[in-house]
Amino acid sequence: MHIPDAFIPLPQAAVYWIIAIIFVALALKWARTELNEEKMPLIAVLAAGIFAIQAFNLPVGMGTSGHLVGGALAAIVLGSPYAAVFILSIVLIIQGVIFGDGGITTMGANIINMGVIGGFVGYYSFKGIKAAIGNCYASAGIAAWMACLIPALACAIEMFIAGTFPLVPGIIAMGTYHALIGIIEGSITAGAIYLIHTTRPDLMEAETAGGVAA
Image 1 (cartoon, rainbow, N blue to C red):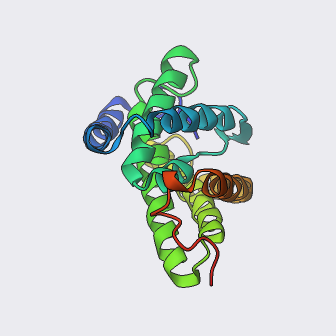
Image 2 (cartoon, rainbow, N blue to C red; image 1 turned 90 degrees about the vertical axis):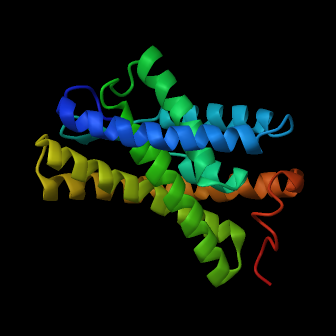
């Protein structure tokens, strides 16, 4: 899902960068008001974990790849979609600048897909599903699956707009792979939230209040 340089024309890449910068600014505002000494180690652990899970890439074809995202996990644990934007932006900048995983010109699109779309879809679908079924772990798993699939579909649409590859084959390839990868991401997310909730419930007490459905 890391879009390389030259896959998106520069004028389109500039638009994605502008949108990404707006959300990164909002994420920095969230960080200034919400982060404290207790949460900083959690930010570091989440960033390292997301960096690690994104390192396992599966070739999708047409020059791109599939992998876990981690946006839902960050947003749910820290109680805000802007947490996902904040952490994913850090991860993507390190990956792109130091390791060459994802382009510099296309980094705005990558931040939008994985940080913004992944974070907002993951967080608000978690809230909605949890309100409906009451089980925070199942809700987190389903939300993480959606937060893996929908950014992949957004990436395919962006590639179509850029003229990089056709719409239907792109959606089929990206959608199929990430629907399967999303099952793994959902399982990891649900398991991670269960471990955090059972060992340090104070870190995310408001988000997982009630734990398992009554």
